Amino acid sequence: MLMMTLLCVMLAIPQSSESILKPQGTTPQPGRPTIIVRKGWSQSPGHRNIQFLYYDESFLFVTRSFGDAKDFGGNTEPGLFVHSKEKSRWIQILEISTEGGRFGTSNSDDPEARRKLMTASVGWDFRYFAAAAYMPQPMRAASFIAFPDRIEYDAIKQQYTLRYQSGWNIPSAETVVYIKRADLVKEFGKM
Image 1 (cartoon, helix red, strand yellow):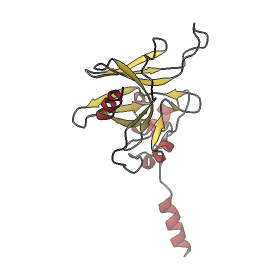
Image 2 (cartoon, one colour; image 1 turned 90 degrees about the horizontal axis):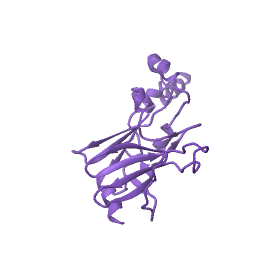
Image 3 (cartoon, rainbow, N blue to C red; image 1 turned 90 degrees about the vertical axis):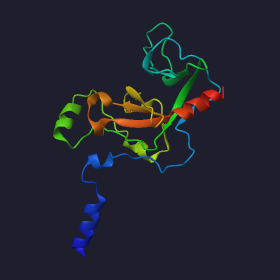
Image 4 (cartoon, rainbow, N blue to C red; image 1 turned 180 degrees about the vertical axis):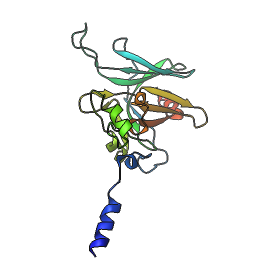
């Protein structure tokens, strides 16, 4: 009986954090949009504290950080923004679906990855978003906010892949989520 109990306990405990980081997300819900946007908002994110992430023939993705309170005009509200070239309008993305996503952490069981990640000035663990339907933009860690650092478009799947913490080149550290192009087109069509 004791052996059976130990075996059950051992099987229930993940053997490494790597097994937790396989593609996760919520149960697929057909028709659920991949983005939630700020309603009734179509103004430009401005020119201060912005960073251009990605652009193609249809859309421009931009982030806006807090900036510095000492700057003329003070801090700005952080956000992820998309501009439609066709509509000449902006939307602010408040949340992105976690469906099909992968969620990273600055901890690793791989000794080489762990050594590399120890040089990070702050840690992160976004794996808890796997249990949520959406994750906020920007994501908040203990002492920083996280925006995508790389965006790619997959023409076959008609979706954008947003990558966070990808500069580390460590799959278990990276968070990856997706935005369907049709959802962006739909949101801009409401304006």
